[in-house]
Image (cartoon, rainbow, N blue to C red; front, side):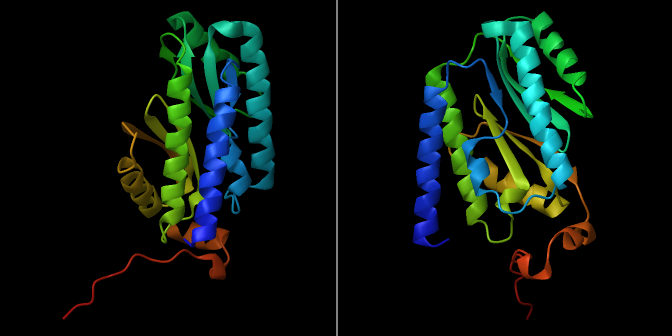
Length: 217
């Protein structure tokens, strides 16, 4: 990565961290973070992208009505699979959040990672936002990956990777993410596609560089 794009990336990360701090009082957070403006290639159909936005919006409204300010729930939808992260006051609230989200139109699956505990502090949330930014920057720096193929969510040091990727991409992104400072655990919520399907999704000129293969004697 050249110096100017790298500086742009870091500037956006700082802005995202500040935005997270200013909005920390909001109990429900949609999955489209500030980094979404950097997405160039999305492997979802345009219809799926619109559905995901609708799922996040409707889920947020319904959970806010049901749980109020007692819960801090992050809602991230990718290809109609919903990830719930954050904190709720009790097991009943955790189950209720999943039930409500499951009834939202177009939701096909739910991964419930809500923790029963007090809401995370502003410091923790800001740290998670920074970690997400560092993971995204590291994926951008990788020459054999499309960073835009991954949606990254961080909650209390645990990084969740979402997206439609090949097994090679999944393994490579996991390897990179584990080396990023602040990452305590990596959870993969990925749809695995074949290399042939990837080639059909992407124009030939947009193919990422392949890992170098050592020359044989």
